[in-house]
Amino acid sequence: MTALSSVAAHRFEAHHLAYAYPGGPLVVRDVSLTSTPGCMTAVVGANGAGKSTLIRMLAGLLRPASGAVLLDGVPLKDWQPRLRAREIAYVPQSTPTVFPFQVIELVLSGRTPHTPGFQLESSHDTEKAMQALENAGAAHLASRSFTSLSGGERQMVILARALAQEPRFLLLDEPSSSLDLKHRADLIRTLARLRNTQRLSVIMITHDLQLTASFDQLVALRCGEVAAAGTPDEVLRDDLLRDVYGDPSVHSRRIGEQTLIWVDL
Amino acid sequence: MITAISILFFVLIVCVVVGLAAGSQRIGPAQLFSDSFSRTLFFRLRLPRVLMGLVIGASLGVTGAALQALFRNPLADPYTLGVSGGAALGSSISIALGWSARLAGIPFIFVASFIGATLAVILVMGIARAGAVVLPGALLLAGVAVNLIAAAGVLTIQYLTDPASALRILRWLIGSLDVVGLGPIGRMMLVLAPAWLALLAYSRQLHLLAIDEDTAATLGVNVRRTEAIVHALCALIVGVTVSAGGAIGFVGLIVPHAVRIMFGQDLRIVLPGSLLLGAAFLILADALARTALPSSELPVGAITGLLGGPVFLWLLRRRQQYSVL
Image (tube, rainbow over all chains, first blue to last red; front, side, top):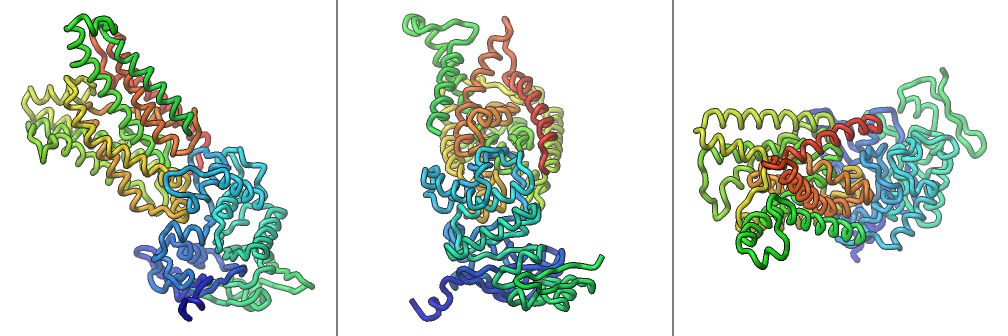
């Protein structure tokens, strides 16, 4: 292994990414970030700041207008889609499935990158899928129909599908938006546990700043650009948050281990 | 999976036997050996007709299942999306111009029909696609519009062409499985069998696409390539079947739903299952068409339409209740 590739191995990097939708202005400009094994990254910012566009580029769903996404030093577009799918999993904001798939069927689809072509999933895959459902706190939903679930239940099932992929890097686009207080906490606990036990890396978009206190790094986007990046302590500051959200009435206070963030109404 | 396919295979065999037995002339195994008239009737007309039902029904069933998954729309089928309409227009043009010629051994009506079907698919998909989402309303409306345009085109051609061609177009449009001898079926199978297999080979990709396009893409499916290939295969299959049997509606709509209700949503079962059940269904519908009236035959398209139309409306109603888009 060359020196270069050993440095680049086990890293997921975005270099100076930019993106514009057809006929539109740049919605992401010069964004760089790096994720390493066992690192939890939160991407925050106001609505329309370019967070989802950024994560879709990281997931390989959008091709950057300029810049590059590198996985283990190799540009994402040069990865075989199937092999890439073993490394990177993506949890979209919503999954508008029309057909009433069974939950376990849906989670099993996450095993696709690991099953040879023209074969159905094995009992080993079913075990992995059940384990993923348990990790996501959705084991009780296994035999339900996906289309009959609530928004929050769906998010847990889609998380399970991504976990069944056994990725090294997990990308989540607002996974907590439909979850209640307890399930939000459970989600973060699950991600933190998988980070500690399996060195899972997480890149998660969220509006819930409270949840980001236990993350390793925060990237705050404003109008498609990185406004601030660093540890939660470095980013969750009054002045930075006011700038990121464009609202002078944002406050944050450190209380012991917790950071409290609120807005004057 | 093996159970599901075995059951449907058994159903198909039963339907083939029923189809071979049904008809104005009773032909039992005994007559086949003793009576040469019965033998001719059986091998020149009845067996080819049942096989034609098998080939066309299987084609419509499997393309219906594939299109429903690809467009993530339970109301999609070659007929509702205007693919059959496009193929019908292509076929009519070629009948009117009297192009009985062959292009590299392939009857020109196949080619014209395939081109019509392809244009319809491209048009409908182009209108209904908005980014990663296929708008269900726009998809079906575009299908309706393409069907209307194609129907108007066919009418115009019928009006302008000579009476003999006009009558041929009319007879053919109604949709019939009438065929003499096994030759035409053999020629169709040369194209259809590879196309069926190729479509079945995309079962897994279609399974993932039926869940969600972004999900499929992040699980390693090359979405654009799969889409293009499935489009082309469906246009090819529909083009060949329509040029041979006319636009027989709703088989591709009902059959995949029946398979889903019986065996669940997994496309790796629904796709081959729809191939088998589509064949069984059309053979049965044709047996009904041949025997329903004492003195004459009903067009098989009328039977599938009468059965399929209400199912379509029922699905539409259900879709409103559980609508997610």
